[in-house]
Length: 146
Image (cartoon, rainbow, N blue to C red; front, side):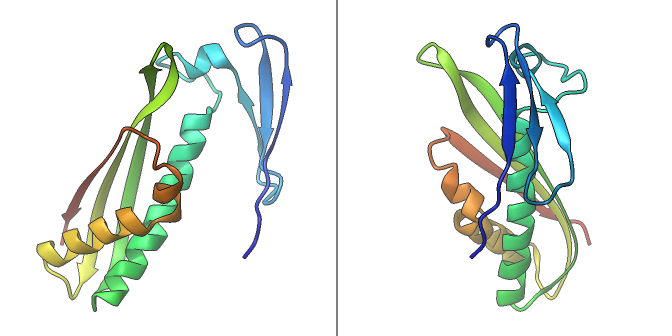
């Protein structure tokens, strides 16, 4: 199985510094990061570890759900997954407190109960979900739209 790489170059202190995250394996881009913008409500043109985790989780979950739907005898026509990763405080330090997955799908061959079952199996089986086992709460809101 492949290994993927990202690199961050950081200059300065936590509060005054900033960095650039480079997606090295894919070469699709370099993105600005800073702690003050990470901890703010508005990202102001920068990304954050939480946004990158959200991207990883939503894309991994989409692949896992597509597989679970297929195993259940259905055919995914369209899946839309949103992952919201929240940075909060725990024991006085920054901590990822929650991940909220929302999925809406158009699927042939499964009813709402079958889709929910496939979504729950994908939540458990997704490699990124497994990597995030230390997060206090991962929720799932799954619904068919067809």
